[in-house]
Length: 220
Image 1 (cartoon, rainbow, N blue to C red):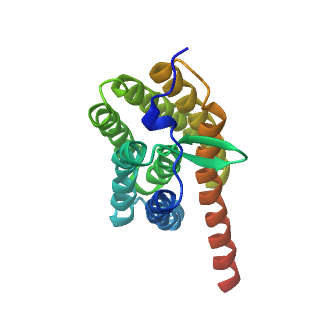
Image 2: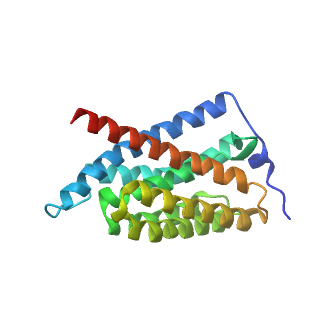
């Protein structure tokens, strides 16, 4: 069993965690706006064909792809961070969780073809932006997790965005966590923290979406 590199296993706090939180919050804000736009486009599609990506779709795709360099930078500069309940995980875990959310939103606002192209771009970026030791693990985990997320989300999207997002993100985050840790470190020591950190992002997005729906219904 290989040990986690020191730069990844060292837990940092204070200003580093606050800085990471600000980055995550900025990207999460884009995802919430994408949710609203995605729902509006979805309803319009029932009435007449809509050619996308629209500005909202492009913004969501850009945010989705941006999580990849952000995840690599987070691991490099912040090491590992607490994710709750006494667990820790490499700082990039939040960005990976956000990527799963944004992938689902991009599907609704930009279309299937654009998302598949973005997954391909993301896989290449994951390979070239990672250190040589982590390149294969990073690219493989990204590609497999995103495709599995896509495969689960696609048949469930007709049942509603929330249900599809919950199910697909659960599969995607588990696949990404297991595959990356096994290929990169030969160890699953960080698995609970990986799953928990990514789950926080999914829950945050779904909570924000639910609140926005209720607020919109209250104003109608």
